[in-house]
Length: 262
Ligand SMILES: [Zn+2]
Image (cartoon, rainbow, N blue to C red):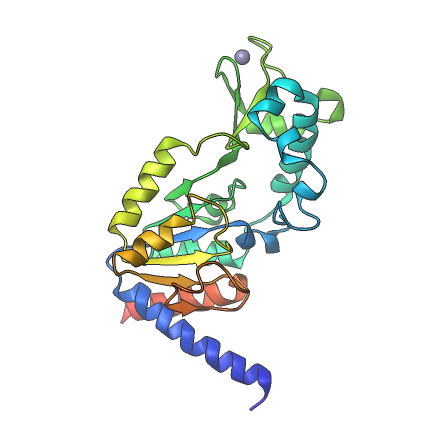
């Protein structure tokens, strides 16, 4: 047997175990992070080539930066908005939407802000860190359309509120800001109920989202880790799908829906 064939056999076997877990789960959720959007052309902000290799997060994406450095905030946001509006959902996003439609996943809890899960067809998406699809004035709260942000050029920034002159910002969690209360409450409620979680594209470094698999495991639930490479969930996961998610998840989605169809 060649090395590739052996790896395929291992993956096939683990996919079957994962499908089994999702099929028999009462309530399963997915937890996703930056890795799921990398094949869509959005590098992990923290990776080389990611936005944090070009922008200092505290200087461009913090409550302090909004006050002191509106120009820098918007130089960063222009790049982020362009990158995200050019991106398309990939096969991993689509597979998660398919598993939800098949009744095998209740919700996707995501740390991503790119809106790609919704564009792929996922209906119940909890955005732990907010979304670049919504903008509002940091002073008066007036909402602004994201389509306007996508048309801004370097000459139009910083984008100030036409009503009060405050800085317009995306509805994302900046450094030093709290996680939106509703997202936190909803995902922790789901974690209390869930008996399986499918982790995709996150190494589990960022709190408090990384506590969700631990909560589910602690109550006797199962953890499937579909993140390529080592993660902080390696010690608690029941099944590790050590393959690119855009390859493993479509296979998993097919197995789950075939099992449901039987
Ligand atoms: Zn305003």
